[in-house]
Image (tube, rainbow, N blue to C red; front, side, top):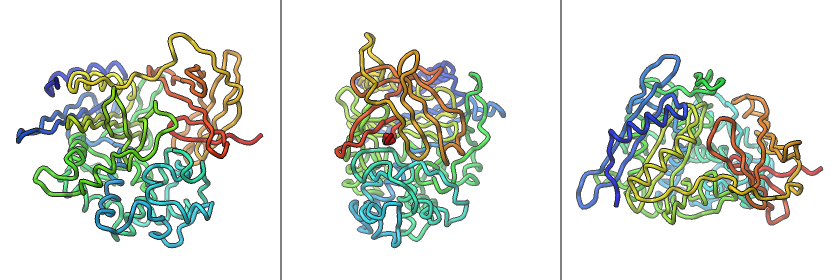
Length: 463
C-alpha cells in the first residue's frame, strides 16, 4: 500500500542524510497524481546552504542546475515539432541543416534525429567547446562538429553524447526560427507556468541560486567556474527549483496534458519518449535501456523512467513511476551526491511506493576469478584516455581527462582498482564514496573491442 507523502518526515531524513554524505545544500521534490478528482500530493523541501562561502540557506524556491535532465526538455521540444509535422524521428540531420558536416561524410549524410535522441550516433560526445555567449553559439558549434570523430560506428552501440543534444538544440532553432533558450521558454516553460526555471546565467541570478562545490580534503569548497558554455545549453544548462521539475514530470505523467487540460505534447509522443529504443551495454550505472530522451529503469519488475544530471559541482536526479503517478527529484550542490541518492531513494520508493529499488551494484561477497589479460591496453575517446594494466596489487584502471574536458574540469589522472564481478565486468569505487561503478568490456559486431565506463564507450587502440 502506498504511503503518504509526509513533508516533515522527508525533510528530516533529507537533512540527516545530506549531513552524512557531505552535501552542502539539497532540494527534494515528490509528487503523486491525484485520482478520481482528488488533488495531487506534493512535497518540496530543502536543507543546507546554497554556498559554503556565503552561508545562504537553501530553500525550495532556489534554483539548482539540473544538468543533463535538460536533455529530456530538449527531447520534448523535438517531439513537439514531430507532432507538428516539422520533422520525423528518422529524418536525416542533413535534410534539416544543409551543409551539415562531420569528420566522416557518410555518417553526416546518414545520422538521424533518432540517433541523436538515443545516443547511438557515435559522434564523440564530450566536445565542450565554448563558442561564445551570442545567439549564434549553436550555429557556430556546427563548425566544431565538422571535425568530430566517431567514438563508434553509427548505430553500432550506445555511448552518452552531449554533442548530439547541442545538435538537437540547433535543429530546434532552425525549425522554429528562435534560439534554443527562447524556444524552450515560449513552447515549454511558459505554457507550463514554470517561473523558477531559467537557462541563461543572467536569468538564473534573478533568483537565489546554488553554487557547485568540489571536494578539498573532505571539505566542500565552492567551484571557481559556475556555468557550462552556452553551446552546451540543450544538453545541460537548465536551472530550476525542484517544484518546477515536478511540474515538467507531471506533464509527462499526464500524457502531455497540463492540469487545466491544455495539451502540450501528444499522448503518442509522451509515450514514445519513455518507450524502449536501445539496450545499454552496461545496465548498472544508469538504467537498462534508453527511450527518446528518457532513461528507462527496471526496479523489482516495475518500469520507471527519468534522468540524472551533473554539472560543475552540482548533481540532479529524477525518477518517474508511471503506474503510481509518482515523480521524485533530488537537486544537490556537492558532496557524495550519488551515495545520498542511493540511500534516500531506496527509502522513498520502499515507504511511499512499496517497491524495491534495484540492488546496488557491487563486487560479489565471495571474490571471483576473472582473467583481465584480454582487456589490457589503452582505450581512447575525445575527452578521456583509459588504460587497463596489471598492477602490483591486481588489475587497475587509469583515466586521464583530455581535450576540452580537461580544460573544463582539470584534475590529475585517477587510478581505480578493478574488482572482478563477472567475465567482462569489473567494479571500481571512487575514493571516499560508498557507491561502486561498473567497468564493462565488450565487442561490437565488427569485432571492435570497447570499454564502457562512465556511460561512455571508448575503443581499444591498435598496438
